[in-house]
Length: 192
Image 1 (cartoon, one colour):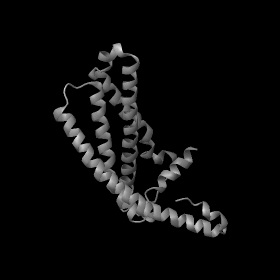
Image 2 (tube, one colour):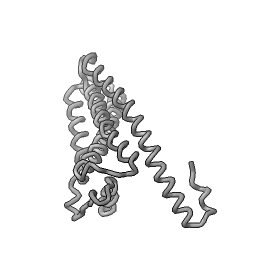
Image 3 (cartoon, rainbow, N blue to C red):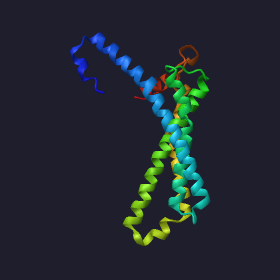
Image 4 (cartoon, rainbow, N blue to C red):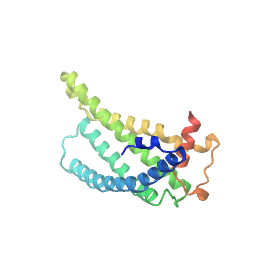
């Protein structure tokens, strides 16, 4: 739904309608979408991990990366129930500062891990197509393990500042505001 029709209304009414639209979007759309993603992702990733671990032999670099992708996606969807609760309660966070940071850290860490794992799959397939004579070399287990380690290290490096907000001299009184997402906005604003 586009908000273009708001250009004919007074500015204060536009602001009010935009805030209302934002609240409704977060409370109803995000909580339902995250709930659906949680259910489908949990079932799908547990199934795929089970199939990979019981049926897939021999292990090659691509299968190791695919298991890593399924694991990062599984951990990603495990952060969803917290976000469903958060958004369905009007962005009210009652689990404390540490859990807020931990859930946001886990959400972004595994999101970036999934993205990087998919990138590794694409790079490995590209190498197999471009260098078909080196297929045996590219499919060695060691390259899959190295790729997965790089994915986890880069993902951790990208989101570690979420835990270290105090190094910027920032404090987040979550007890007073009960909002978990605000510290991310403040942290991003300080980096610009």
